[in-house]
Length: 469
Image 1 (cartoon, rainbow, N blue to C red):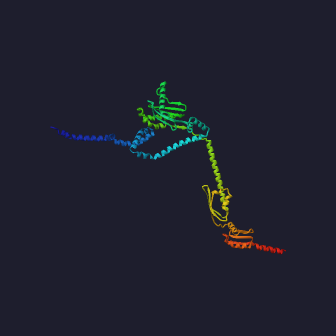
Image 2: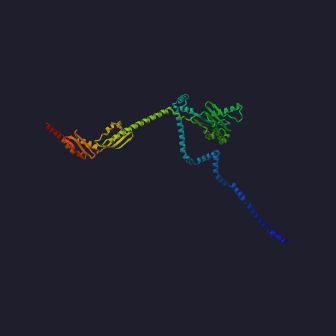
Image 3: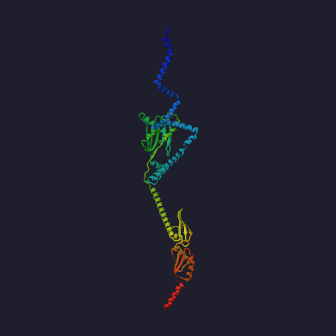
């Protein structure tokens, strides 16, 4: 017979297990709940590419900026990707790239033209500077003897150094990969030079006990020097005229390193096709540098002559212009001092003098006054309007012209316009004057108090003579 207590335990066992599991689950949640949640999130991040892409996009811009500041490797690394993207964009729609670079095409073109003009002007300045000097004459003789132009001789003689040509040669085969020539330099047979350098390298290594790893770095012939920088798969050679600074070797070393960095695979797999190495021209172009002697500040005699001629011409022009202005001013002053003449406008235009104003018909003639000056009448254009002047001088002149007094009569006019007559005159003239005086413009009254008739005077003289007898 079964114990009832045992039966109760058996009946309660499933419930107890369930309760125990719930308790353990709660305890596990309390102890490991945070870690479990984080593990689930990490698992989800690893399994979901979209989440990874979103997180990378948040830090990628900052990473690019930091990488660009640190060194240039990031920029060099993304060059192929950018070139591919541009190529795809151009093939897809050319207008997109054209519209994007349109704002810079104009400034870039102008800058290129300005640079070319600057180089041309510099060459021209050097030619002018040395053209009349003793040294310039010697260089002209040299140009005639060598068949070169005078400009070429000047550039060569003022040159400190110039890298005229650069060669990129495949080390293993000795074949020429790329060849660049500076402007104004006559190019030589690049393949022949490449083969010659390779042969010289092999000759030195085979004929002399040269330690492994040592290379031929410099060749010199006359005023030409050849610098050689050797890499694992390629050789960079530069032909230099003049004395290049030693620091320039760092540029050669940096160039060959960049070429190996970007085209190392093409160099290792080279089978004779040089087309992939056209991309290296950008690095090789940076090696074509030059430096000229700074121009001395000594001024050429021809400059002094030209400057003296210009100063003399300017001085002469100022002198004659000043003299002409003074003569014109004096002429205007004389006209303004003449009664019966009023100047309303006077100016100079296109090398001629223009004058206009008012003139009383009995006033002095401006042309006669002009003839007394040293001004050429042909350069003076006059325009006078007639008017009646009420100046006392003009009234007196007008009265004399109208009345025509005898020599024994003196006429004068005061500020009130009163015409005074003094002296002796025939009775007939006095009567006529009384009538005409009223018609003369400006005359307000005729005063004859001091005027004696000639007949009366003669009669008085005759009477006096008779009395004396």
